[in-house]
Image (cartoon, rainbow, N blue to C red; front, side, top):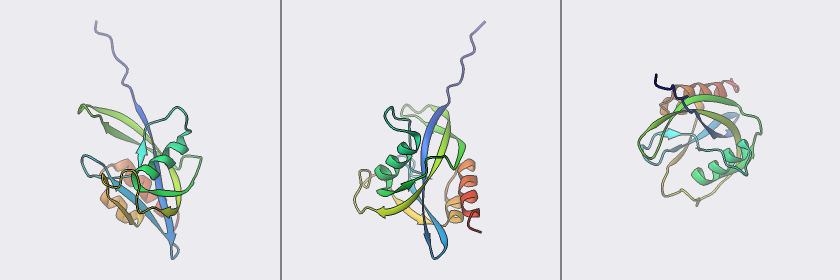
Length: 144
């Protein structure tokens, strides 16, 4: 009998960058490098960083954002991570709020990604992942 291999589930940590303008929330999305989909800045666990610190570092590297990251996850959603070899793996994305204080004109991945501020509702229409749509709408609903 063939052995059942347990499906490995990856974990990623994402920042949900936001700012409040005239009492209304705006969130920032970035494009993925290869498919140019709109996503949150996110990355894999790193040995020397806590989960919220990974999210904060990814917001800097992918979008040039500096701010205050919350240490407790705001939400999580299921996703599919496309690996460099083309394989797809199930992934859980834990989302940390990042209140943006500064947006840099130059940052490490500036030439590889676009970034754009929008309302949570607009962002929900731009992303393709149902779990991320829910996270964005839940965040926007906190301000209604």
